[in-house]
Image (cartoon, rainbow, N blue to C red; front, side):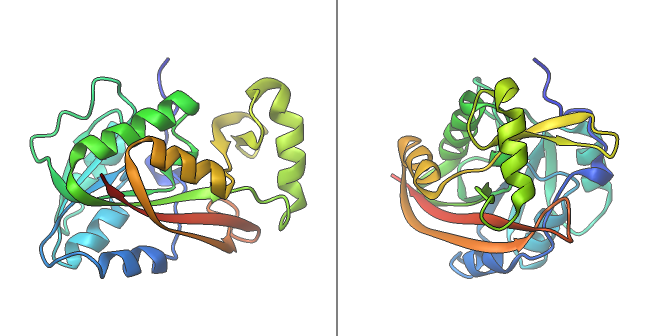
Length: 223
């Protein structure tokens, strides 16, 4: 099945403007480290890292977003790849010192796609390389709208805390999964990483800036 992100309007790909957790992670990396940005979209996070002197490769399934990223300047190399491909990412630049995975794990697809994405991230890393990952966290405690979404969409998604992100007309765009902390920790560790840190923060929603949502920020090491 074709990913809904392959033809998604690059201008509407959800993102977060607060990169404070990412900035803290980047402080741990050596100068000039090689970094893979998985699910780079139009390249905003990649350019942030390139400006800090890192050798960045950004990958995304959306060809239009990659074209925009490639033509926007600011450093970095950008290529079209299916992040959850069972055949791997096939990147000549590997291995990397670090992989950044900003929010994409929550929207890449079902459990199988999430597992494949993390396997591909691990395969792209050198031994001991670092993974930075942010994901949406279960948020019904800070926003009652999420409780309704989880409940109403469960008959179709078949997964607790998964719902459909919709446009203004109510049409489903893609599935979004909100993780519990233990669930995300287990997923990361099963993929062959040592979890080093997991932080939960309440911030503005990535799509609805006037609403609150919880987010998880994980740092892990390839073992």
